[in-house]
Image 1 (cartoon, one colour):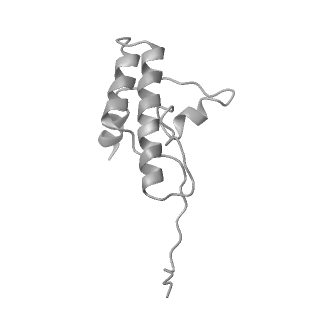
Image 2 (cartoon, one colour):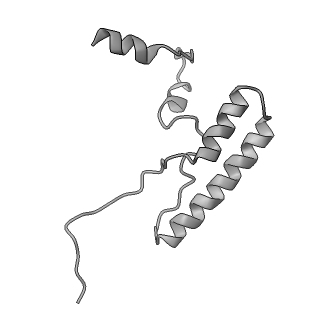
Length: 98
């Protein structure tokens, strides 16, 4: 007898980035490693993720969006008229407003 749950799920593609990848991105932004070195770390993390997805039996395989710094902002920077200005005090400003 096959039991079906009333739930359905879809893989949307974005997975939590491993610490190794987050550190490599920080090192790249600090100019401690090259773009090529960052790409090697991304490749290794993506390969590991794909193995996990296959082992979990997922029918849709994704790279986890590991080549993006963020899941939503990298998309926004592609629009004309939208600029990328890193800030460090956004959170503090928000807390002060509360």
